[in-house]
Length: 295
Image (cartoon, rainbow, N blue to C red; front, side, top):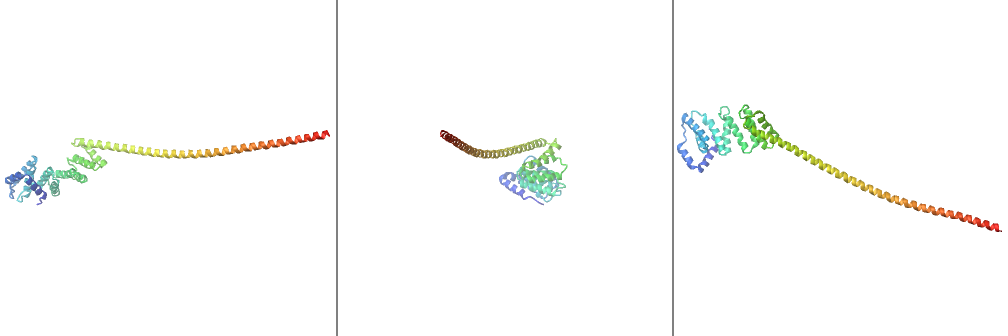
């Protein structure tokens, strides 16, 4: 019979911490390998009662004793449920490795006739969520839904899948499972928590849309500003070029005006000279005529 090694490790550790408890347990409950069916039933009921009272060390000791008992006519409890209750007890002690070994052994071997098979499946998946191993938790919870399609715990499992996906930042995927709870299980204990997550994710999505819009607006503004600055620079360069051209034209006009003015003055001089020559010629003719008349 398989007995998880961790069952002995935690007993050894706790014995060193609480020697008196284990001494009393050892005296009052010495392992017997020839227990009758009634004794087995009595011990299993007592172990469950100890578990419910929160007496974890005593529960572990008694359940391990039952598992170790080899001379049993009815192994209904010790071959199956002892592993389940040991797993549950180790969860309370935060010894998840020991809990996994017991629960996974129970799940692997007692699928068809384990009295607490469904709960063991859920508790095993939940441990991975508690350890923040969210992807493994998602896989195990998804397997739970396939294994138990009509389970009364479907809402709880869908919620835990949603939480695991949320922790993985897969918000759209998690929203599907949270809405499964709110749409199909309004009377569930997980309805309010799922509804809160739905609002939170939708608010987050709206916030992301707004952030993207603001980012786009900012990018558009920066692009427009850069375009404006570029066009402004081009306009300034064009104005500068035009100013230089105007200046050049002004110089050319001034030069042309000076040339025209010079030519005009020169023409005036020439015309005056010609006029003087004509007058001189007339005067000479008059003089000559006067001289000829006096003769």
